[in-house]
Length: 179
Image (cartoon, rainbow, N blue to C red):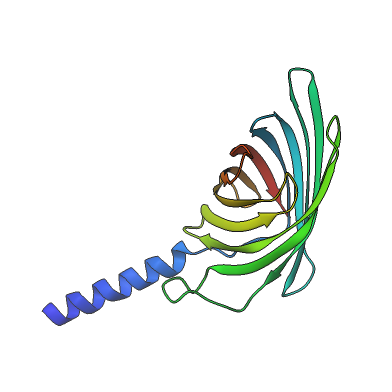
């Protein structure tokens, strides 16, 4: 009887774990609010081109007092085949791109880094990225976030980026539509 209950418990746990994982969806558009030294709305999007490549972009219209700045970011992610032993459904990637600041500000630079996205449950996805940016006199950024899917296509997203040097930390909150 003890062996049957242990076997049943193991099967139940593995079935629950398998059903708790979701596939990572890279194709989405989103909008929300950014709070950093300057704050305001943003729009962003991402589209998977094939098994390994994803393009993404973001536009933010930020302001503080009489200072207004627009930030445009465009890049790519290369999805690696590297898997984490403790989390085989996680997706690791390498990212690179360009970002520019215009209007009251005027600066352009490149960025690069690594990241991982992890489907925690069918409704919750976590991500973290470590990146280096040549804009704003060079700085490193460690960001992490969460997406809560309240339907198969809609999610509430939030993230925080901890930045080095004199670059202010950033908090973002928004919604996205996955397609």
